[in-house]
View 1 (cartoon, rainbow, N blue to C red):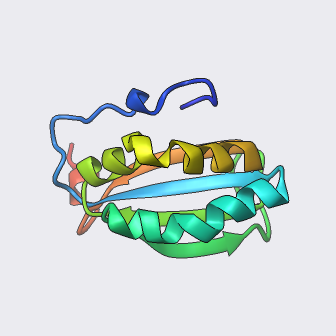
View 2 (cartoon, helix red, strand yellow):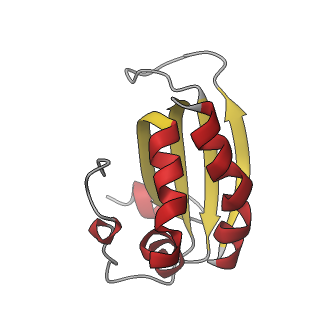
Length: 124
């Protein structure tokens, strides 16, 4: 997990970089104005780097699980890990990322490889 003090180059590419990935973002809004500044510009920048927001959500209810609920969910589909890394490491977006970091708290950011079915996970 990345802390606010960790540079974006922490997200180093893996061996397989061409698979579609999903970035699950769960967080609370800490500073409305900061996050609003991020949200106004981020959709165009995400798209420019090969990403698409596929779901937005507001926390409703904890049915099962032991993680502290976060108020906001954003699910972003990326063309590849390279596309995600390009967005995270683009020096022209440093000011944009700062708005996200300053505007949010309790951030969880997980990446998932796209699967067509669950067979790869269920192999014995």
